[in-house]
Length: 270
Image (tube, rainbow, N blue to C red; front, side, top):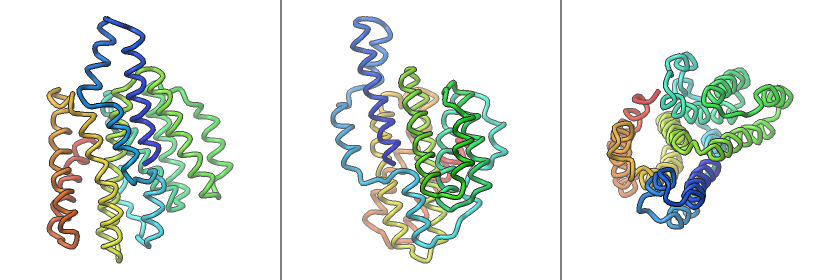
């Protein structure tokens, strides 16, 4: 999840710049509060030390382990019409970004095209001014090259994140991060349940799940806000279950508990 790592670093940097450029204003005070008491350097150091791949690399690893594509693992495109608030759209922009990476990694051409359209529409709704026509054309031109499509998907996510932070949409950026992480976790769980290499998939999943610690750190200052409280509580539960699973990697019940917690969280946002 290197692209998501960049998102959080940029979001933190944007908050600092706003604070520095508007001394003693309400805007700068708000930016400082958003950073909360967690050291920015510490968060960035944590990010650099977490051995998480990009979202696409995670999906490619699942494919290489011989796990079949699980159609039920992705969010239905029909759900897009249900997302009316910017909160829902921001979370599911991240969800559909993970789904797009999953489909591209498994060479699901038709599905990849549909998920790209969905992603671009949500991005437009959120005023992320990426060039949809250009991206769609490039996608069609490279539809038979998985490496080219993977690079294009990464560029789309990076550009979206850059625009979000340049326009100080730090909350949208954070929700995008959360949505993508949750959907990637759900796909990891679905893949593990279908895998013949369960031990290998559990190791891949645990590395991904450990990223929850960083998300919780950045959410800490928002945990008492009604919009974030439930997500924060559920992520904290997942964090505890991940630690338990790390000590009991072969315990199917422990993995089952984590699976239920992730799916409950995911069902609450899609």
